[in-house]
Image (cartoon, rainbow, N blue to C red):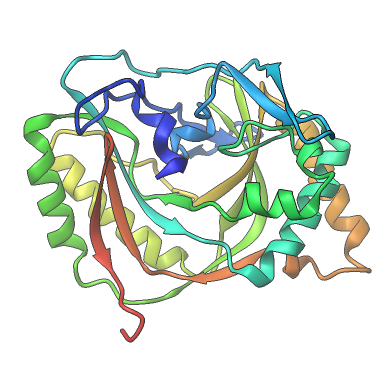
Amino acid sequence: MEALKACYGDTSSDSDYESASSSPTLVHSEGFTPLPPPPVSLLNPPNSLGIYCFNGEGSQDFLTSQTSRIRSFPHVDGNYALHVYIPVCIPSPSKKELAAFLKKVSSHEPSLHAVDVDLPLNILCKNEEKLERAVLEREFHVSLGRTVPIRVHQIDSMVSMLRQKLQTQQRYWIDFSKWEVFVNDDYTRTFLSLEVVKGGLREITKQIEAVNGVYKLHNLPEFYKDPRPHISLAWALGDIGHSLKKVVEQVIKRNTVESSVKKWAFTCKFKGIECKIGHKTYTICKISEGH
C-alpha cells in the first residue's frame, strides 16, 4: 500500500516486516486537543531525499526537498510498526470539487504539498486532471489506534484479537464534512484535513475503544482521549496552522455564495478495517457489498 510505505522504517529491509518508525502526536492548530497521528507516509514520502516535478516540456527535473525521515521512537531490530485503520477512497463525483478547493487554498498558501506525492500543490494545480489523479485517487486512512512498535511474537495475537473484537461490524456511512488544520506536537508539520464530526463518528469511536482494549492487553499505549477522526490531504513544513486556518476560512467564506460548501466534503461507506504491520497488510474485517 503506497500510502503507508514510508512510515514503517527503511524500505531496504528484506524481511516480510519492516522496522518501525512512528509519527508524532497531532494537536489542533491552536494547541488544545491531542489528536491521533495520520499514516506516517504523510511525513515521509517515498522519495524523501528529493522531489520530481514536470518542467512543462515532458521531462522531469530533480528538486532538492526539505523533507526527511522522522523517527519519534528509536529504531530497534525486531520491532515492527503497527497501524490499525479504516481505508477510505474518495468517491469520483467529489473529486472535482475537492480539487477545486485545494487549488484555491494552495494559491494562497504555496508551501502546501500533496500527501504521499511530495510535490507542491501549486505545481499540481496547473493541471486539475493531474491533481485529481495524484492527490485524490490514492487510498486515505482513518487511524483507529496509535502507530506503535510491536515485537514479532506479538503479531499473531494482535491480529487474532483485533479480528475477534471487530468481526461483527455493520456497514455505515462516514461524513467527512469539516475542513480542519492540525499541527503535530513538535511543530514540524502542518496538515490540511477533512474531519468526521457527524455521520460515522459514533461508530468510529466504538471501534477505537475496541482497538484500545486489544492494545491494552499487549501493553501498548492506548489512543488519545476525545479522538477526532480525519484524513489529511495536504501538508506543509513547520507550524503554519494559524495562517493556513485563516486561508481555509477565507476560501470557504468567499465561495459560499457561488458554490455549496458541502460539495467540498464527501460521504463514503465504511467497508472494513485493516491492520498494517511492517510490509504486511491484514484484513481485520470486511463488509461485503450485499451486507
